[in-house]
Image (cartoon, rainbow, N blue to C red):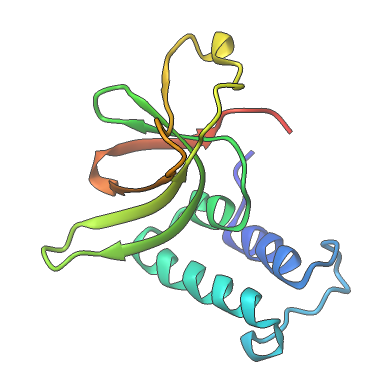
Length: 139
């Protein structure tokens, strides 16, 4: 089932306000949020202008086992998208935190996943090389 944009916005608002998603949860203005939540909301809104898809909200507001499938059929394992930016040449870049664990159930994927080779897990990925974004584990 595909979520519509208002469902997704409701989800992120619930995460940012640290409340369960109900009809009674007010959508707080950015100024009413805690400083760290204000920053996250503003980063997500900026990212959505460059890449308006469901995965931006989900992958920027949670730390999980996510996969980015590249054009050459390689999966890059990430924990989260930290930011999205546009380079001077117009290309879109994802700043990510790579997965640093091999505890994934790769048997289900039947494919190797690129993870951080060191304890330094920050990376930037050119979005034009990504053809799919998905979760690697069930919740």
